[in-house]
Image (cartoon, helix red, strand yellow):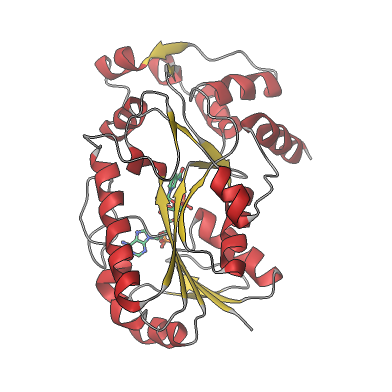
Length: 297
Ligand SMILES: NC(=O)c1ccc[n+]([C@@H]2O[C@H](COP(=O)([O-])OP(=O)(O)OC[C@H]3O[C@@H](n4cnc5c(N)ncnc54)[C@H](OP(=O)(O)O)[C@@H]3O)[C@@H](O)[C@H]2O)c1
């Protein structure tokens, strides 16, 4: 039986673990949280984690770049990949590894198309730089050990419990400036968490190697899902403010500002051709419609 270990049973990792179990994998992973029915270890439990890794055939990590062994406090924190820093010696016998990266490695392409061969547009944000460094750490590790490595460059993740409908409802309860939504001039990519998990499972089954953009078919300005969410909920459309105005009024954190400065349309052709992913939610409209329907039940 294939055994999947997931460092980071967070939003995507926990869904991956459940779907992988249904798909016939034995599954374990790390988190500070309990997940009913899943084998969960603490990241710091070196004995337990090493024991599990010795039996692992497929490894996925969703741990973002951060100081070795410490918790990420912000995107600006730390350098090393925490998994490699602590467990590198225990990973060399695992035949397939998958590192969950981010489209931030491409930087700002001013709304142009990017595929997996597109070099980063410099200068990168700190976030993008750290991701790229982490990707390179994993590539060096895989080359040294002859391991098949999949690098997943993931778009903004949404789904049940994390979506524009919920953000809009939360905004309804706020007042004044907090209610404003930033109007983005550029294009942003997203992926429904169920499609992300499908891509991870397709890659695991094929033991795919290489870089894959993981996003849906419809990059669009970041405020559009909120406007559509308002339509679906039948509430008033939020007022829009430009990112420059929002920045000047102290409404955008440095991370959010750097996000708004980076525009591109990621191409997902390789994900479809080589992993065989068939998107259940090819655009945010389908995703939000389904989420609105579920939430109404
Ligand atoms: N969210 C997005 O829109 C987006 C977009 C592009 C890329 N990504 C990347 O894709 C991956 C999955 O995203 P997600 O939203 O599912 O992530 P998430 O919910 O934030 O989960 C991250 C997981 O990593 C663990 N973790 C964080 N720092 C750690 C550390 N220093 N040591 C050990 N474990 C640590 C967390 O542990 P606990 O369970 O204990 O909290 C959690 O299980 C992440 O790398 C994320 O940065 C996300």
